[in-house]
Image 1: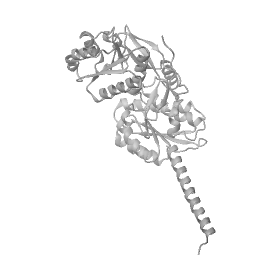
Image 2: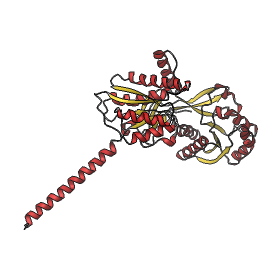
Image 3: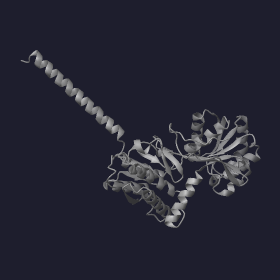
Image 4: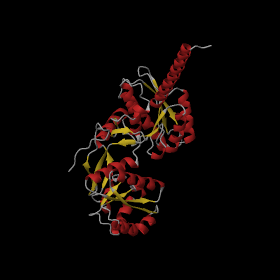
Length: 399
């Protein structure tokens, strides 16, 4: 028979066991939550996978793949303290081959995957990597695939829209409308404008689409112009780029009565590609974004000095992806492949300037505001070079 003292001792022991188990379980849960990705030893060599779109018959993809490889090697060279072994895998731009490449990379004990290029491939790779607690830094700019263990290094519509409308708000514009082609990309772009309007306390007063064709523009320009004027918008965002009819759209809107002296034209695309787009009368004095020119020029010069040729426009994404990991590793950071460190608030300095990865999986990149002026562009708000203590970009004050 158990006496009272023995019963008390047994009760205490049970409570201690329960508490010990609970604390251990909580600690395990805490560790699992923090360790979103593998812990590594910075003093030993770490394997990283680079997935590139080579292995097909497309010469353009082969050239791009070579540029991505070279840029990633440059990032490693820039950080001699980082012990990195880069393993290269060919995807041929195909989701199935990209998935197979990811599986092979994981069997070779890689701690991080950089690439692939295309959204569907990145999505496939992400699922394989997630099952093995590995993060993926893809070269895509498709926001819909970002999240969980997949990050996009490309510049998104949302990042551009946030910068553009933040500047417009600073300059006193308050009523925003958007004009878009009736395409999936157009709708994604327009939605980013809506979200940016809300975050900048702007009134979103209208969204107007048109069929994605020259006839669609011509037949709907008057209707769109009339609605913009009736909405009392003081700024209108055009989501199209030069390849999808931007000059034609701007010409028709101007011809149908859009008062560009009273309504500021804003663009989510690069109006300087090609340069001739800047001659479009309907875009005169309008604003759009460009990356940090000084940072890009520096990267291009260094790349050409090493390899003898200028880099592909997308090469910088491979540099940035490897730059993140190499920077953290050179600092002796054992969490260099983990989400908590990949998304550090102070960000990094990459091929096109300051940037950081967000918890949403998107990249926040420093952009300049440019104004279209007589066939040229004029920078009216330079790209910031660093983040402030709050994690926001530090912008130069403009008049």
